Image (cartoon, rainbow over the protein chains, first blue to last red):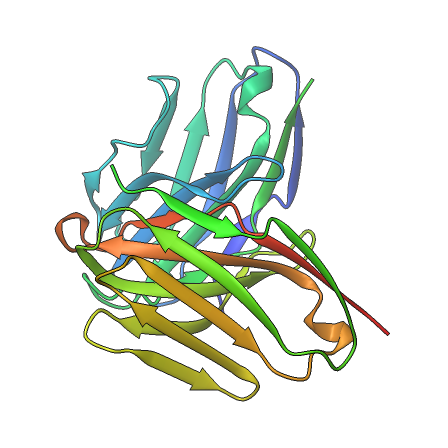
Length: 114
Length: 113
């Protein structure tokens, strides 16, 4: 596709439910990032992949958060046993090469935990 | 830990006015700085990227400057239009953290017709 695609665009989950958020990066982009954006705040880094390798997961807020990119293309962010504080917009970004921070962002997935 | 601050948090101006958005960061060891635009319910659109060795970048009515030693950047918007209404985010990448971006909280701009 022409840009970074995220699905679903909106997700409502009951507290305690598991959710999976998908990111399709721009074809050929090596680097992939996940960010979390709370209402009225700037995005905060969650994790980073270079191809299939997860090189930095220091931003994941708890062990309930898990991300994977098994074939170095599509990535999935999984949140287990969701809690209300997980409500946020989850943004995915990709860039062509490692070290090039001109990243292209998807439209995000808005997660609401009720 | 890198911290990025944007001032003001919100700004409302009449159409046609020139305006300046400010961004400051605490650690000057940056790889580059980017300005993004975010419309409600949308992702981020990159406006300008300034490498650490550069002083400014221009695109159309936008001009971004970088003073790395003082930890400051400004985004200048000339002849503002209602279509410029959005949230503007500043983000820096540290030299030692690869491509990871640290964002400010943004400036919410409203341009009134």
